[in-house]
Length: 393
Ligand code: CTP
Image (tube, rainbow, N blue to C red):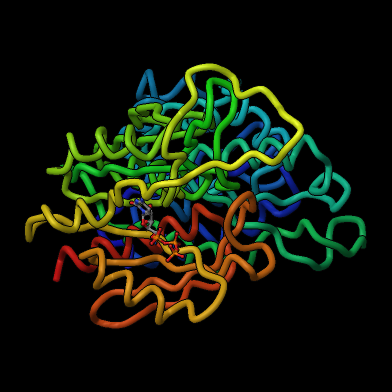
């Protein structure tokens, strides 16, 4: 399962450190080359001899005093995956803040490989806003977090914070190691709701936060794709992504069509279907009576792409529906010439718009795949998996 892959297994100092021995053993059994990197406090819970006996590569406990004078960069560059199990609140905070105060965090900062963080700590610590905010920061940067489970903790306490089961850690590691590589693939993603001006101070807009589009861009970049994000919102730029800011449907159309030869286009933006027919040059002053605004159709960017796209390109549309989700998505697929339509029922709880979670059905000519409620980053992974599967076919 892990044949030929190099896994760095980071262990920080918590009582769950003894379970990292089992993780190490399973990785080696699966064929991986494993380099254990233990923090100073991890060594108080587990002995170096255990890892020296089990792992395939020399144990690293400091950036100094090794045969390799710069072990953290060598490990960062050669790792196919870095797992931190258990990850303590301190290790998570140092990683989020970029403080490379030990060999483990230095390696984490020196890598472009996927990272899997498996937190373990007491419930009070796990629920503390500092831990949760640091993990949110890491997730936003594309780090994978395997949440702890509920159960017995140190000192006889019971609650959330127990390290994920080694079998779950191995399953997640195997999923990450088989994530398709998208190097050499160009990806264009649109995100956010367009703003259609009425006058110099007002616009017609919608509630789209852009989070789903940013998650797709971040995930594509972490898979090695060269990614351009055409955005109407001002979220943190994902690592390695070029962002082009636009406001209106017409501006988004012009930017997208200028790059219409991109290998993969993901239209996750909520593009206005209508815009005011005329835009007042000066601010419209209020009067006693009602105000009437005439609207006209905007250009349909997805349909325009569908008309010019070639066989080697993949075009993905989104559909925000409140009823007949799959049927509507299927007709959108045909109508607009898209290869995939990601449909979500925006009337369902925790789905769409400003939420951090989403639940979608990915519809193609061949059928549909349901992706149950999960983070927008996880949804992005499923969408890109579907894109890669379609391109491979
Ligand atoms: N889209 C677009 N240009 C538009 C409008 C929409 O490219 N002017 C894209 C969106 O980015 C999205 C898909 O088309 O990928 C959504 O299709 P649309 O027909 O607008 O669907 P909804 O607005 O969800 O629904 P409705 O069918 O009610 O219009």
